[in-house]
Amino acid sequence: MGNLIDGVAIAVASNNTIGGSVAGEGNLISGNDGNGVEIFNSGTTNNRVLGNQIGTDVTGMWSLPNLRGVYIFNANNNRVGGVGVNDGNLISGNLNEGVFLRGTSSLNTIEGNSIGVDMNGGSLGNSGNGVSVEGSNNRIGGLVTVVGIFTSPNSPDNAANVIAFNGGNGVSIDTGTRNAIRRNSIFENVGLGINHSNGGNTLLAAPVITTSSPGMIVAYTTAGIAGRLEFFVADSLGSGEGAVFVTDRTTTGIAGTIALSGLVPNGELLVATLTDANGNTSKFSNPFVVSW
Image 1: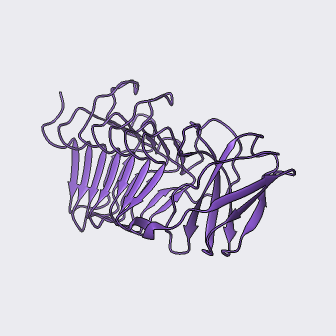
Image 2: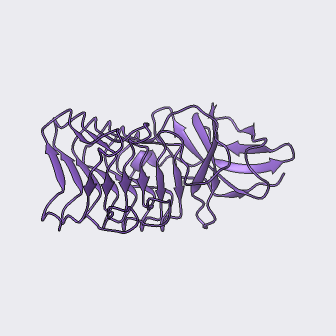
Image 3: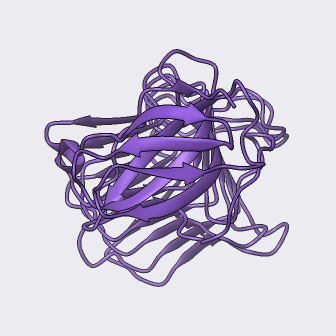
């Protein structure tokens, strides 16, 4: 039997850890009428949510929903998940968003989590968006500079999140800007993989993949915007969500090419995002079928 309000709430308190980085330290936070975890109000900083199951039963295979998984409201510098092997949370099966950064929430990090999948990587979506953001200067995913390979979309790199099977968008940026969405595995959400509304992330234009050619060369344009391009193998759905991170590169805003030798099989769908110098990440580009 869950609580009538939140499972765990932190207000005007700092340096707390819910769960832990050691196997067995995580909590089962499920079945609550309110949010699984709520972190709220200014002065609520440097709190960590690590290694918990939020919205599932103890097996991680069935939904035992909260209203939302993790709800951060007007609070800054908090972290949900991490890069350690046991740091990530399983945030699935909730009635609304998996994670919601609401109001002026800023400088928060969402990394290394599984959002919308069950313990084995199957479908156990949250009914709303996987991640919703209203604040600014938040990071969703990682900044690790390693080159990916074509592998299972359920095998994320370090700080990347798996965000899949949710009833809304994978990640939705509403009003806030400078929110970086980096190196995640986003696939099979009902809405878009990444969506902007009400000026979110300045409505930064997505890059365009224009051609592919023998030698595994892909050409692209970025509408004159400098920043960092990230390339992904897309899922099979029409909107083309970035399921498997492939590689990234900086761009000065000039149209260019990139060699993907050995990284993307012939006939796969390829998509890209652009993150500008201020940390705004675009939507995914339209999917492009590569032909080598």
